[in-house]
Length: 374
Image (tube, rainbow, N blue to C red; front, side, top):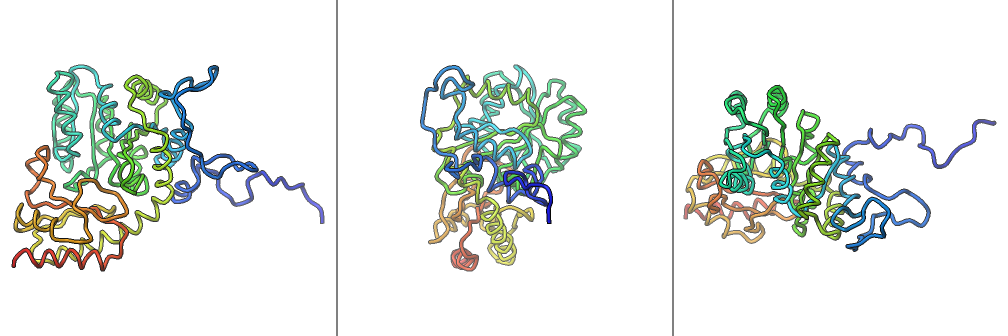
C-alpha cells in the first residue's frame, strides 16, 4: 500500500493549531521553546543586564527571553499581546501615565484600593480627574462618560474588589467606544479562563500576576494585554522609560504558575461555591457575595467590624493576609485599610479560597463563626 510520504514535523491530522487550542491546553503549551532535539522543555531563566549589540534587545531594561515566554503565554490566553511589569501597580501607573493632562477617567467606586489611590494621586497632582461610579448601573456609567467632555478612559473591574459586583462589559465597551473613549478592564479576579475582556470590546486588560496567574504567593508581577500594536508600542516605550520591569526569575516563576492555572482555579472555584452556599446559612453571616465563578467570596458579618476582626484571628487553617489568589486560603476584613471605600461594609471579610479540602476549610471557619456569639 503506497501513499504520500509522511513528514514527522508536520501537524498530525486532527491536531489543532495554537490559535484553536482550548485555554487549558494553551496554559500548558504557550510560550515554550520549539520542540527541537536536546532543547530544554521550559524556557530557562536568562540572567543578564547586557546583550551583544546588533539585535533587538540591546539592554536588559528593553526585554528578556524569560519575560517574552511569559508574555507569549498570557497573551495567548487573553487573545492579545502582553507586557510584563514589576507589579500590578507598576502596570496600573504606567497605563495612567499615558492619560493626557487634564483628561478624565471614569472608574468603579469599589475598585482595588491601590487603583483608587493611584487615581487620587494623579488627581492631586493635576494630571487627571476621576469620577467614581457604581459599575452595576450601566446607565449611570454611560452618563458619567457623557457628562465629562474630557473623559479619555473608562476603567472597569468585574468582579469588583472586594464587593464582587458585575459590570456589563460588552455594553459599556460599546458605549465608551461610541464616545471615543478607551476601555481598560482589570481581569485579576476572573483570569482569562473565566473572562476575556478583549473579546468583549476592551482595549487593554490589566492583571496583578501576583495573584491567580502566579498562584503561589511568592511573586510580585503585573501585566497589561492589548489588542492593538500601536497601543502595545506606546505602553512598552513607557515601561522602558520608567524601568517598571520584572526580574527574569519572577517572570519564570509566574510562567510556571500559569501552567497550572486551570487546575488550581477549577479546584478553588469548586471550594468557593460550596463555602458560599454554607456561609449563607450561618446566623452570624448577614450577606454572602459570590458572582458564581472564581475563587473570591465576600461575607458580611452581622456583628460588623468586631465580628470580622474576631473571625480572622480565630482560625488555624485560614491565614489572615491581604493578598489573594494563592493555593492557600486567606482572608481579611477589608475596611481595616484606610484606603478602602467607605461604602464597603465594616463587617465585610474577603475570602480568597485555596485548593485545600473544602471540609477542612469549612470546619475551621464554622468553629470561629460559632464562637462569635459566645
